[in-house]
Length: 368
Image (cartoon, rainbow, N blue to C red; front, side):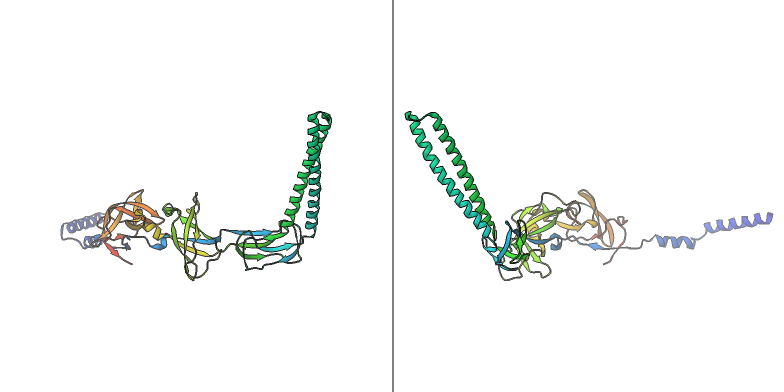
């Protein structure tokens, strides 16, 4: 036991002597570790303008005038004048129903009206004569009252006959189906010999000369889009160009996509090109429109490169291979992008990810 204690005392003395001598090797290794290794980062330069791709919106083409033309009367189709793909003019006859019964009904109504008109003429003559005689005292008041009643009854019968004739003529017109506007026949569901009733769909009609684009525009820049603005577009997938004029901006924002519906009228083509068709997908480019907006002047960074709360924030500037914190003032202009209002120059480069655990003076190694 005594030997063990003595050995322990000798060991402590050796350690103590070592501490008082030259610098040990282990602390030298620890100091080497203190020398910080460069942190690999991606760096980006602020852009003086946004890429046009982020100012584009995908939309679809649709016809402003499109209709399903249905029968307005019952009967057999005796004539179908057009086929799918044909161009038609407003008022052009597209189909004809059998009008035999409708013509008979119209003739009967016309005859009934003629009889009612004749009866009214007779009642008018009688009541006028009775009024004259009553005024001279040659006719009793009771007789005049009777003639007045007869006259009013004749008026009512004439009016009823006129309404019946108008209804019969309307039924006759309903047997003829005409185009309500210029367009192209897109579908035909009935043929000659088919029996149809009111509401039976016969044709689909689309005005291909009045097309519009419906596009979902990000809420971040929709307020800078103005009604009447002319925007450029391209057809997918051909890339054929066209122009459209903004007609309306949606009053609500889609809660899922954070976009606003914009409607723009397709402008007539100036030259030969691929025609637009209803249902086609297109891209609308708003970059030219927003470039004229003074609010778009400045320096732009990806939102991830800025650590910001509201308008105040900071970025990590790459300066001589080291990180330098720089306070900046920003505003959001688009999803994923901010505009630097103050604190950064166009020639400087910043770390692409502001969430990295960096400090002033941290050594950086810029990687692609």
